[in-house]
Amino acid sequence: MKLSKSEEQLMQYIWKQEQAFMNDLLEMYPDPKPASSTVATLLKRMKDKGFIDYETFGRSRRYYPLVEKSDYFSKHINTLIKKYFDNSPSTFASFFTKETDLTDVELMELRQIVELELKNRQS
Image 1 (tube, rainbow, N blue to C red):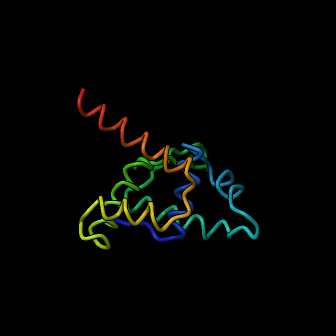
Image 2: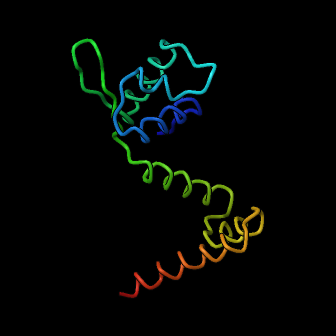
Image 3: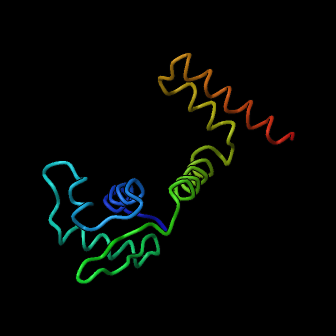
């Protein structure tokens, strides 16, 4: 299941806080902040989709993620690769390295990440 753009923004705040009350989440939004009823609706939809849950403290709810950020984005990157890059991670990597404004330092960091992953897989 997928989050809408506004749900994904809110989910980013929940991932960052790890657990948060409504007021905590509202404070994280830039001005102009959405209405609390709007955020409450988003939270309900996200709970219904299985992305978050909450604990009740009196009349307040503390929300927390049920889905790890890395799992969510891994799924979406894999979908992107399948849909736009003919299911070829190397085509995606080639596009990413050529079409983004990566510095030489960032390219070297990517190389180190790939080399470390290869080393770990050989162990």
